[in-house]
Length: 233
Figure (cartoon, rainbow, N blue to C red):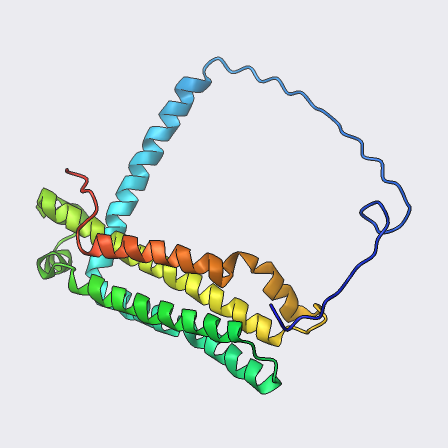
């Protein structure tokens, strides 16, 4: 980032920056466990957990289709608003007179994310079968799944995956935008609250978020278009 001052730190030979020495003592502990019936009991515990997880997921997907318009309403808000903090960051940087071309590129990237994800959300909603939506309104989740054909189940799962991936991408885009906003408010001497936020969000640099969101967007498109392998293939 170009706005920060160059800070050089001179230190001694050890991590504290002086001539003190540090002695590290490593303690090695050996634990011996004896459980003759561990394998069998572990398998018995995993089976009901797996069954519960599958049933919970099935109920969640039924709820998703039963409230699909509300879900996509909030998805549209999440995707479109993801560039808001980035645009505000640009305004702050311009006001401070410390703008660089990289700042423009980052805002442009955030806007592209927002528009692209919004388009994916609309595409995914359009690909949700109306018959399945009506069925979810008329039945409980067990009857819902029993009434679906194998192809219908694939479509239902694919659309659900698309919505989840779009939501994840929107959250990543928001965090990327927040990092840009914290950068715009951070002090040039690398101190203060906003610099701490900016530094803590190093995983959401634009050069990291851009390929990640691109990959997730491709996955969302494939799921919306029914291009993913089906569970009944």
